[in-house]
Length: 342
Figure 1: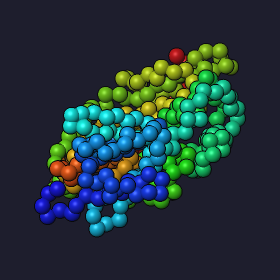
Figure 2 (figure 1 turned 90 degrees about the vertical axis):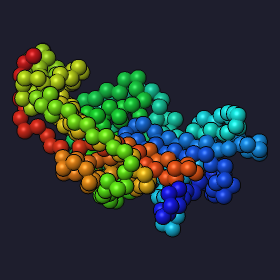
Figure 3 (figure 1 turned 45 degrees about the vertical axis):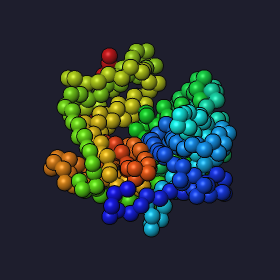
Figure 4 (figure 1 turned 90 degrees about the horizontal axis):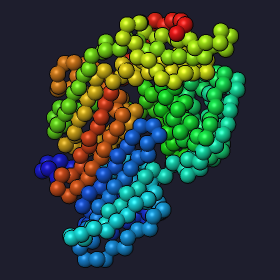
C-alpha cells in the first residue's frame, strides 16, 4: 500500500458467514474480472497455506464479494460459485476460481424452438420465466417485431447472445434478472443509472490508446432471402465501396437491416480503444460504466468512453488496482441505407 493513501478493503462471505477475518492474513491475491455480455464474471483468490491449516473448499460453494477502500462503503460485486480449486507448492497455496452464480446450468441446455410474429420482448420474457428470472428489457428493443426466428439445437444462453448481437444489445444475467439493454445503455440491473466516472491522469500508472482508420469500412452489407422473388437480396447500411459483408443469410429484410446497423455501430465503437491501469483501484468501474478522462492527449480527453471490461486486483504489496478497457461511446446509426439484388 502506498503511503498517504487509504487502505484497500474487501468483504468475502460464504453464505451468511463473513470469512474475511479468517483469510485476510493469508491473502496473496484477489482478482475480480467483470465482463460484458454472456461471459461470466470471474473471481480468483490465492491464499497462503504455509502451515497446512486450510481445507480445500468444495466446488459449488457460494461466495459473496464486496470491494473498495477502508472508511468508505464497499461496492457489492455479487455472488460467485466455486468451480475450480487447486493446492500448489512450495510454498503451499490454495487457488480458487469462482464464476458468477447467475449462469444457471439450465441456460446451457440445447433446445429446439421457433418463434413467429412475436415481439422480441415476448421471446425474452418467456425465457426469463423458464429460468425463474425477472426480465428487464429495454422498451424500444422489446417492442421490435420478430417475423420468424429459429432456435435449433441451441442453448438459451447462446440464443439470447445471438439476439443481442443482432440488435446491438447487451444480454446478461445479474442478481436474478435477465437484462437485455442497448449496448450503450448505462443502467444497473435494478434500472438505476450508472454514475459517470471521471478519471484524471494522476490516478493512472499505465495507459494504451489505439485508433484505427474509421473509414476502413464504408458500410455493412447483409443478405436476406426474398421468398417473393426467390432470390437472395442485400441491404446496405452506409455506402458502397469497401463495405463489410456479413456471412449469414437472414430470414427477412428487417433482420438483415438490424444486423447491418448493429455491425456498423460495432465498427464505429472499435475505431478507438483505451486501456488504463489505475494505481488506485476504482470499485465502481464495471462494464457499461460511462467514463470521462482528463490529462492525456486532447483526442483522448475529448472522447466519451464506455467501459467494456474491468479487472480489480488486491495484493498485500500493490494494494488495490484496476485495469480497465474502454471503447468509444455515443456512436450513431449510418445515415444511408439501400436494398438491392445480389
